[in-house]
Image 1 (cartoon, rainbow, N blue to C red):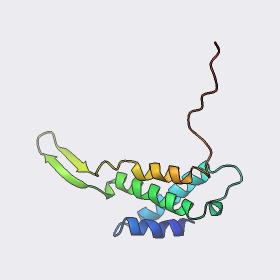
Image 2: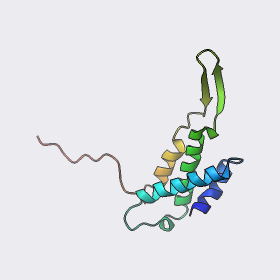
Image 3: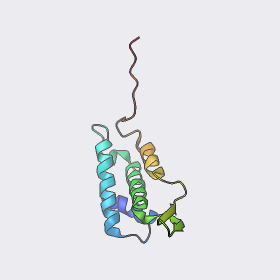
Image 4: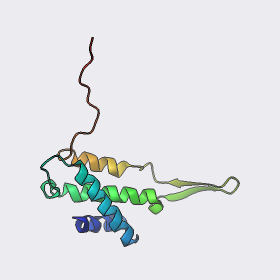
Length: 115
């Protein structure tokens, strides 16, 4: 499945180091595998799985400095500001939404209060 994810990521992150992309794709697949509901395999998710894994890998690539433009640089106290259009984690969030029917519910559950 990693190869299918890698092909999608190469389209999302053209010109990036393929070995790094492959590592990120493998990590994204492992992450999703660990979240799948019992009895659900990646193949059961259809196109959702490779797309979600690719979005996660692309997000992680951006976090590694692979995306966004530098919008400000200050020499005294050395600060660099990178603009990513407010996209931090946005693709990973969408990936989780896409995979929602196939992954275990890990969110908050309110069960009741003694009164």
